[in-house]
Structure formats: C-alpha cells, structure tokens
Image (tube, rainbow, N blue to C red; front, side, top):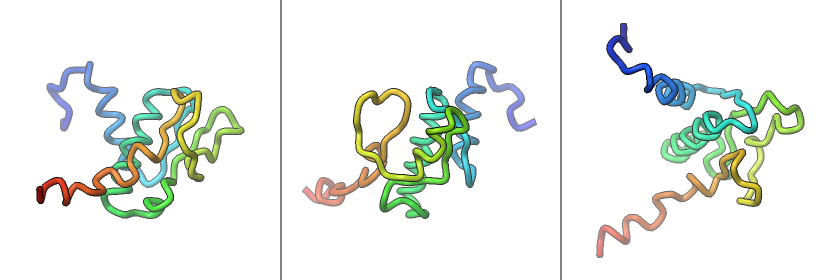
Length: 104
C-alpha cells in the first residue's frame, strides 16, 4: 500500500534507496545499481559517523566475481578503470570546510 500510485519507472530508484539503508549490502561488481547503492551507503555512513566512516569502508560485498567479494571492506583510492565501483573520495570529508564558506 505504501507504493500504490507510484510510477513503475521509479521502482529501480526506490530499490536503491531501500537497499542503501540496510545493515549489509550484497551487489554485483559491474552493476551501476550496486555502485549507486554503495555511494548512498557511503554518504549515510559519513554523515552519521558509523563504523567505517573514517577509512571509507562499509559492510558491502560483491557476490560476483568471487575475487571482488571484499572490495568495499578496504580503502582504495581512485584508479582506472573507475566505472565498476565507488570510491571513498565520493563521500569522505564531503562537508569539510563548509563552515568557513558560510562564515565568509
């Protein structure tokens, strides 16, 4: 009943929002849906200073391929190719320095 009347074209975005709030997320390595879920999880973790916010890690895993299972459990700087995963630079220190901007 909560999504009654919502355009079905928005279901994918709704799936991402719901998945981003989970305690743990499992996605696939080449999925843009999984990538954006991880980015939103990163924003949330950083904003609320949850476990992993300082080093850019989170309870997210890739179930395929096997060698990528723990990619989000360790910090990784941006490097090429960049299209298959999110990097902590997207959400770490996002608001750093914002106070100084507002004071000027």
